[in-house]
Structure formats: structure tokens, C-alpha cells
Length: 486
Image (tube, rainbow, N blue to C red; front, side, top):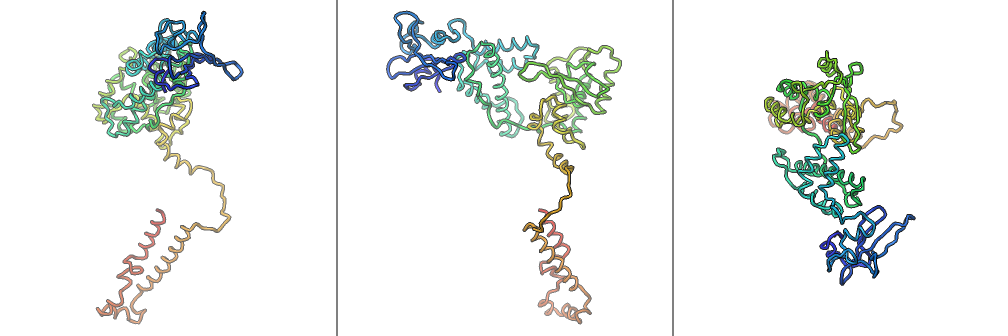
């Protein structure tokens, strides 16, 4: 759909009796009525507060009073010929005659607001600089259309990731769509923040815009127990301690860098962590329940530390910095011979995956709480396929009530099986009789075996097997049972 905000967009619209509207403020919309000849007219639609609205032509504010037309033919003069910005201001919407407010301005405002709330903005800042600003940065927020966002999203999904080592083309495409959806979430967060703070008049162009479909991928790369042990031995110094903590708790790198001595509680065998993920802007606290090995590990490294506010994990006495782990984990993977390499966040996936595959696995709810998720939705989507086997085995623990079947009806498949089993037993008994000593048949069998001609006419059941198929009764019964199982 073409936009009414520009001459080019209005030129593509078809002449119609009804106007093309765009919301400029709550309860206020500016419309453009395209005519067959001449310049189109601006109209204003206002909500009446009773569930209806009124639609009137935008009129000049001074005599001579007449409808205001768009600058389709004549240049805008701010009186009876107006561009979209002037018409919006005249209708009572936010004025655009002053300084413009572009997507770049919106990103700057969003990052400034988040930083003032104490949020980590480095990830959003880097994503905006790499993907949002080069394409959409110069676009006015009031002129941003759903089609522009969709085109931007599709372009990201179609752009191959440089240096990707994923051999499966379908998986690569899913990952690119997932990346595009994450960037869309950042863009919508920027625009929603500005709309909530009345920097942008309307949010209709992106509010209901849905992410790309078929973008979910399961976490199919984690370390086995043996690989995790090799990686830990390949690490050195303080980084080795950090890797151990990540494998034992499933915590993120940023969380471990900020955890303090007071966060470990040996009495309850828990470690308090903070998570600032989400759109609320609030830091959420949760506790990771530790096993005996993790309790012993944290007890050892926290022993003798009197300062409860001291960081547990440091790099030669200094706090770990953002991105400092990348080079170290790559070097450790290369030294340990782990191919393909994993990122530090892969240790979190390793913790989750091995927890679900243990002899006594965690439930999805227990794992969700230990990972700091509000519900099991994320864990089910990411790791649910790993828990299927254990859920199947756990189903045997469901209650049994000793119910007895009230009918003697048997399924046709099992009825057929029972008849074949009966026939196998009967013919097996007959075959056993045929293997009796020759004296039982009056010497006829001995004579048949000694006479080549008689032998060809009366084949031996022992030579040809059960029913002349060359199969013994025992083997026939075994094959029958195998077919029934399949």
C-alpha cells in the first residue's frame, strides 16, 4: 500500500470517494482524498468518544476559507496548499515543521533512556549500528511504513552470514531468519519506547507486524561430558575457573562476571544470579540450585574471603570485560581439539542438555527455574526434543489402577497372531513325530532314505524343514514373534 506522506506515494493511489487515512495521534487521523483531476484534498477524522468519528475537510484558518489541498501540483505554502507535515500540524497532530525525528534519532533516544535505567546497551547499540541505521536511519519515523520494515527484514534474512560454517543450507536459512527476527525485536523496542514517550504519534505501521516464520532452530550443538572435561583442562588461569562455573551453573558470561561472594549460600546450596533480559527494564533475581560438586567448588573458591561484596571471578585481580572471553574460549577449543568450536554461551547449552540427559534428569520446570526463565516455554522450544526419551521412560511411573478388561474382544492383528501361533505349535509337534526313530514307521523311512528314487518322491521333513520351507519349527516360531513385534 502506498503512503500518503509523500508526493510519489500519493501519485500511486487510485482515485476514490473514500479517503486514505493515516493515524497521527490517538483518536486523530489525517486523510487524503485522491481526485481524478487536480490536487487531492486533506481530510481530518476525529473520534467522537462514543465509538464513532467525524470526517471533515481540512480548511484554511483564515479567509478566504476553503479546503486545503495537497502539494501534488503546486508547491506548499502553508495556507491552502500543504504537504503532509503541514497538514498534520494543522489537523492538531504533532508538528513536523521543526526539527525532524528520524529512526536514527529514535535509536539515540532509546539507548540514552536504557542507559539511564542502568541497562546494558552494548548489544542493542551494535545491532543498530550494523543493521538498522545503514538502511532505515535517515527515514522519518512518521514516514516509516510497514512495507519498508518488511523489505528491510527480508533483506537481512536473504543476506548470507559471512564466515558461517553450517553445512546445511536449510539450517543456515533458518538461522538468518532468526537473526532478522531478533533485529526486528530491537527495532520495535526502539519505536515503542519513542511512541510511549510521545516522540512518535502512531504505532500502527509496526505494532502488529509479525516476525518471519520457520525461524526456530533447536540447539543441536553442545559439548559431551568428555568434550567438556577436555575443554576445562585446556583452559588456563582464572579463565579455567570461569569455565568450570559456567558448566556447573549454566550461567551466562555477564552474570558470572558480576556474581559476588555474598551471592553463594552454602546452607541452601544455591547461587543468586541477576538477569536484566526482557522489555520491562527491571533486573530479575533468581537462584540456581547446585549439586554437590558445584557446592564444593564454590565453597573452595569463596573460602577466606571476608569481603562479601567482592567479585568471585576475576581476571588477574581485575573484573572481566565484555568480549574478553571470545579469544580465550577459541584458543581452548583449538587446544582441546573440539570441532566445531563452541562459544562461551555454548557452555550454558551444555549444562541444559546434559541436565536433561542425566540418569536422573531435571524436569523442564526445574531446568527453566535454574536457567532463570519465567516459564518453560523457552526451554521446551530449545531443549524439549532432548527430554522426550526421559519423558517416555518416566511415563511408566504413572499410576496403575489394576483395571480388568470387561470384554473378550481381541484386535484382529492379535487374533491373527494367536491363530498362527497355534498352527506353529501344532505343526511343530507333527514335525517332532516325523523325527522319531525309523522303527516307528515300520522301516518305511529307512527304506526311503536308502532308495534314491523313493527319496526323490518322498522328501524328508527333516531335510526340507517345517511345511517344506526349509525352516525348523523353532526358527519359524522365532520369526513369527519378530514379525508380530514390528
